Image (tube, helix red, strand yellow):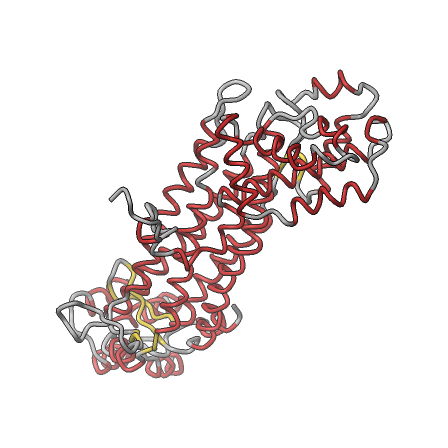
Length: 458
């Protein structure tokens, strides 16, 4: 076993094995390679910011062309560079320091830059680099990978809501027959819920700080007391398109990460709810699943087409939320000015994003296989005339008929009711004839309120 060559089949996590092709676009952001690349970017941008500062005379000989060589180091960063950083880390036992030494190593023979290399990581604690690297990872991973797929789910569901806006559907509150709705309206409910969470996800502030070992600019002020370091820090963080956090300990306290993960978790919970409802509707044969040639539903029952995409989505959403919940609860806690518990947890952000992405794509795949079975839906609602007890007793209340609820309860509860039963009851009612005629025209299929409009407007 020790001599096995690496293969995705040997991956400990299914994210890097079985499901790799379903979430690999997250790797440039959340992998260790990605973290190194973003750390490198922050180190270089910090040095460039220092170079542009008139009070730092020691760097005034560095020209834009010199800085271009620094940019190239980040832009051309590859797996070999990442491996070199890992090799340096074996000696330093410190991952951020390894990035600093990597930059210095690259430019130690550069006559234009070698005398300024000690300004790399100037006045920084590791967390100045880490928090900004993770902030960019979260921001860009969210915006470029996760949100587009989240919106794809919502757009697909919105189309279904409109397509099936007029298809009557027997509601099942507490699992029992209830006032009708439409297929489209029920999907529209989900669309509205998911959209609210998407707004919260995309509008969640991504914070950053660069203020030294305990957040007070201690070393900065000693080295260059004439620089307004608060203004300097705010400018630098803002230039990264992040929101500056003015008050921190050694670490940016991760409250915004908790907020972001909570919003993603709520999106996932809503999608779990939807997956389970669709699963149930498939079991009622309200939806058929289009068979895919070559696919097998059961190893022993050839007829089966199982709702595996929605089940797969539900399982992966649960895994994602378990991690989201743990990170959300623990990341904002740090003993005194800093402890290291967040370090290992932050490395699992990509895991939670990965399981979410797999789940979203499973739901999308499942939706593409669905075919509405109107015949079965219509048959169920047509055989449920007792649901008209609600509108009839409500109209009876309007015309002050005594005990309307109790009369309909006696007529319908636990009994087999059909159109004729309803007709006989209505004909005996002491209400205006025109109102009676309107109620006689009512059927389970037409008793859907304004569901069609709500579904069409989503």
